[in-house]
Length: 326
Image 1 (cartoon, rainbow, N blue to C red):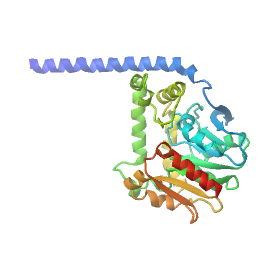
Image 2: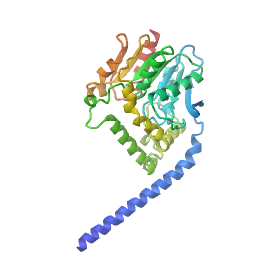
Image 3: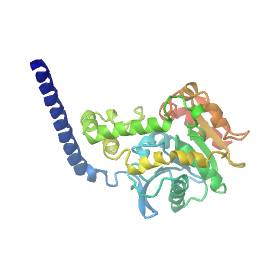
Image 4: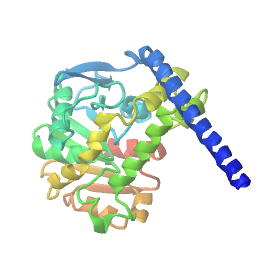
């Protein structure tokens, strides 16, 4: 009995210590977050008022004639402008490139507006039109592939072509197409909640102090400045997976259902870069993309993960230039 009491007492002390550490961590993180907030004011891009909120956008090589390329991020990107900067700079050697941070992303405001595919597309389109462009190419990564598909069908007179970077597609979460015992939506939510727990308790802040690569997912072959990496780090630990972004994932099932029978319309060319790793992991991945394409559209399977714009940036740029010139 005495041994049991000692063990119970030790466990009680350890549990109390863990709770105390968590409370201190949460308080410390909250104070740091409030102090750092001003560091993020207008550090990049410009802000456009859309539906009463501010949306951040970065435009490169605005003097170029012709239709721009509109870059759209994957779900949960902490800073689309900084994440896509290496790709955007290479593309901007020949084209105007517009990188948009949707509501809830990067430096853009959040919104209480439901994250339906119609609302998100309407907001992104309004941002492009406020910049003065009525015709453009869409280049979307991951979940933005869904918005590109809807956008091209809703406004075919504006969309001149679509480029996908391992884009999401209709039916990808159908039970027979899921590669794991639990759904992709559940996996994304669990990943987000784990990341939020790391952020709120201050653990991500502590582990990334002086080492932004521990908090930032980026193409580190690109020479980011210290200021850019610090901005990226702060956005990753203070703003990622906010309620706007989480609402977008909550709406994914309905958004996929709305696109169930969608294909890219005639007259709009499509070029898609698909991850070989995803094709190997998910047998239906290639076929699901083929089902959205027309006969003369192109699909290139590249070695690499879902983040092909990190691993195959040069190939994406060269093939995009070749395709746009044809």
